[in-house]
Image (cartoon, rainbow, N blue to C red; front, side):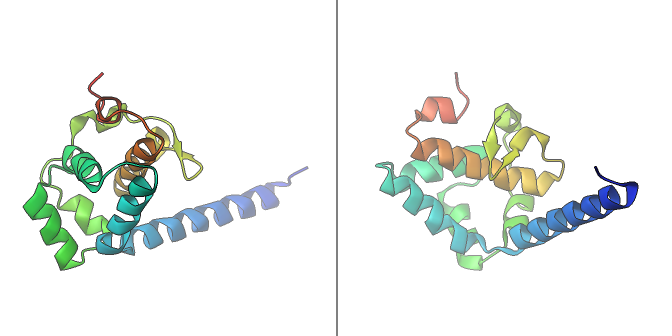
Length: 136
């Protein structure tokens, strides 16, 4: 049985956990995360070009602007905040990633980070690009 105090304490821990996850995710460098996405896809028989296509579709970056972001070593928050055109169809991305339902994440930047995680995960699981890019 939870007392009012223990519920409040539990909620404060959950809140602190969310803040830590947020700040950690925000400060990770995209140039460090990008090769992890590529490696995950390649290990499962997919390609770097497919990872790039997903990033282009989601963010509006192109080959040149993506490379500029990698070379600039921007953090994930900056990467998503500077995205030329975040795809409005991203709201069609549903499901769980990292133990959270992406459609329920309230923080805009964290939700965008998880959208990309989810799309790369779908790629690694063998889904078609048509399905991943929500063209069906």
